[in-house]
Amino acid sequence: MKTEVTHDQLLVGIAVSPGIAIGRALLLHRPTDISPVREIAREEVADEIQRLHAAIALSRQQLEVVRRKAEEHPTPEPGLIIDAHLLILDDIMLVSETIATIEKDLVDAETALRRTLLRIRHLFAAIEDEYLRERRSDVEFVGQRILRNLIGYQEHLLQELTEQVILVAHDLSPADTLLLDRNKILAFVTDAGGRTSHTAILARSMGIPAIVGLESVTQLVQQGLPLIVDGSTGMVVIHPSADSFRDYLLRKQQYEYAEQELELLRDLPAQTTDGYELILRANLDAPADIPQARKNGACGVGLMRTEFLFMNRTVPPTEDEQFRIYQEMVEAMAPASVMIRTLDVGGDKLVDHINLEGEANPALGLRAIRFSLKEEVLFRTQLRAILRASAFGQVRLAFPMITGIEELRACRLHLRAVMEELTASQQPFDPKLQVGIVVETPSAALLAGLLAREVDFFSVGTNDLIQYCLAVDRGNEHLAYLYDPLHPAILRALQLVCEAGRRAGIPVGMCGEMASDPLYIDVLVALGFTELSMSPNDILWMKRALRLSRKDRSDALLTTLLTLPTGAEIRHHLEEVMQTSFPELFPPPEI
Ligand code: PEP
Ligand code: MG
Image (cartoon, rainbow, N blue to C red; front, side, top):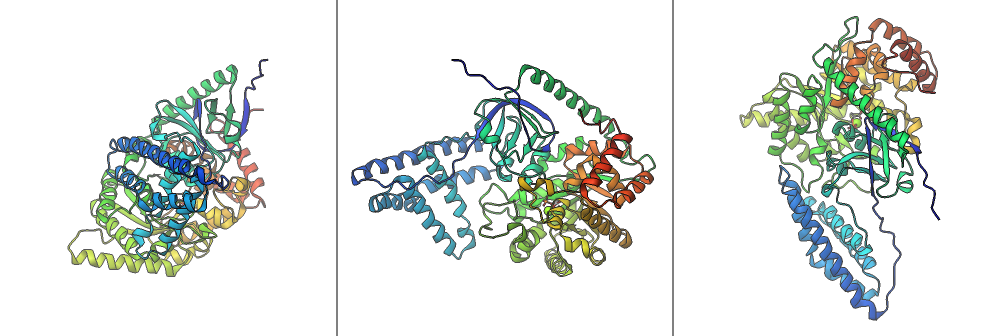
């Protein structure tokens, strides 16, 4: 009997990175270590030990493949990480303890290995030396690989792909995303995640269409099934019919054509029809993204998230390594400025060698500037590297997640001390470099008037500001409906910050994702932002909207929006006005 094939099953998630992809699914399904404890008879002991050895041997083969791949990488770090993992495979404790547990407790190899890993975890926790303590994640990584091999689970090595695929996963960490090969991954879709999770932001900056928060996509899609992903609308079509294929192929071509048309705007001024100018900058995480910024006509870098330099490696980058990267960025962008934000780890940005586990509320925990002020050596190393880079162009330094004046002053004390050290050792830096803060906590918005007197600029981080103001986890797919940039409380918070900046005569920029949605252009113009920074791929779309906008009309629109009591009403009114004023930008929804 022939089973009926269902075509065109639709799923809607959160569209986080635009573009249309058509291809086959690669399901990345990582098993969790929840297989039950299996007790064994004494006669089975030898077999279990044999299974353990076989899993270790297989892990070695897999790591050697990755090691060869790492040799193609321009920097040595990935290779060194894999070398360290290969060494862990030989670790006496890992192997002999596991064998001893199989023999003594009469349990299967999986259970014995998990018990060894638990003991190692405890041992690491007690180590005083921070560097050694942080090696724990490497042992975990290797231990999990052996476990996967014991279970018989085969992970598709994402770096080993030979054909182009659409990646389907429950979730991807920012570190996983960074390793994706953009030539092989046509798009990715995940069950978890929100619009401003860092994974989403990375997808956008890498130009990979992506949809997150689909909740059950990993359950509905089978390996190799054809998929269509529309990263602009958040729609996934599972097993598309021939009609859908044709339809989306056409939309894909139209999207790519519109993208090409945008290039004509590259060298035109970023201003409204009545002359209100906005500086449009790029959010760049690494020098590799510089060509993207250039291609899209970015006027400098409005946010460099330095934490990405700390990911996918076993030790933090040294001062010299950091300096070289900042210098490359600053020189490439000169005479335009580069805003370098100090390390912002924590929340959804986890770094292997920085152990932040165990916090009940990571987003409210030891994150960003709090971490830097605690880890002074790391902080000063970074400040020194940034200051040294400032001798090569225009650097603006920003501190993330400031909540009040004390933190800002504490940062400034460190900065001054590092400047004195550099002066004493005759190392050049720009003594007048601009110092600002990322305004992303409600308290910073409320205190904007006081903070504005002590900084050279504000950059509003709406991703966190919205999360903290509305008490909504930015990465939680179940709360996405509450995460609303147009919430009346958010518009008022933004008004406070812009007003404080204007009174103090300092520039006020926005570097959160709200800065990259053309729907908000009139609101941002009316609020009085002077700069917007976004993923390079979004710059020309925003410029197109800005060049159609008008300051006086935007001001009147904002006045009306501020009289409305709910985010839904504000959005409804804004969409109606934008669709009427700019039908070419915001075509009315298809019925
Ligand atoms: C923000 O919070 O808006 C921001 C730009 O920083 P991040 O997304 O890195 O937290
Ligand atoms: Mg932030």
